[in-house]
Figure (cartoon, rainbow, N blue to C red):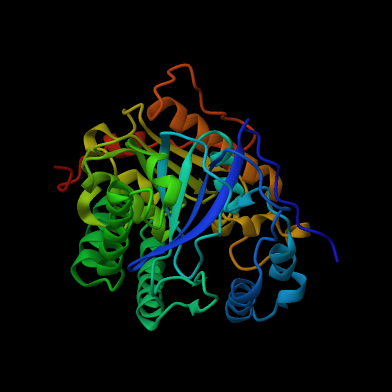
Length: 380
């Protein structure tokens, strides 16, 4: 069988990785490492591998796991298990996976960020994803996430039919926030991400975080997530005054907090290719009459990318298509997402004003000027 190869990180630092569980928080942490330890580890082994293969069989019954995610599980990573942390402090990212996905779903991206000096703490959204605990026991998704997804997908069919009618789209969101099953879950995911920030703030060297307690700089805190986790990340950055920025990897914003309202912090949204003039992000993060004018709210579409191309699943050989994988080159889109994220963080978190987003090669800014011209009755 062909091999899956994770892109080698481009930064100057070694990347460490470790699993941490404290109270209700189960986390995988990538960080700049002071030294290498052991041989490269496989992507997923034991219970974690079993969970990944079970997910494949559940979500994609026509694609046998041994020809898809078993290859990903066997791939060698470029991080070092339980390596000592490079003394910090380092800018810190709290990350959330997508619905019915897993904390390690963006290992390639996290290793890349760690190699450039970032600590990334990826938290399991309990009941909304799956992971193996340090002792090998398993945690999986529960019924509320599936019921919420079914409800949301039925609503999205109607949203698609509305086209560019912004008044109708306004009403669609109002109905979602009135009765959508996904809405309370977004709040729970947001609060769990903020709880990670709280745990890092209270961490001591003799606690579960060990030498990472002094390595995290919460004055340079970013919230980041993919899909439902991306919506939760933007909401967490809006609610948590410690946050400096947010990154949303193809997440539809599902809370009312940023609907026609200015984001408190810079936001990067990286989105799959789509058809039509109106993107779901256009009605969020800025006042309607000023949409598209803020230089620190950046919306980028990646040509030929589908939803799960914003995860490690994009690296499957030959782009064997599990659901929601597009024709874009897997390694290319993985490297592009990493480069765009790093450039955004360097500029808006690290203050390197010379940093420029690597647009081109399939990355294109979204035009939201039509929202500024909206003269409907609900634009205030």
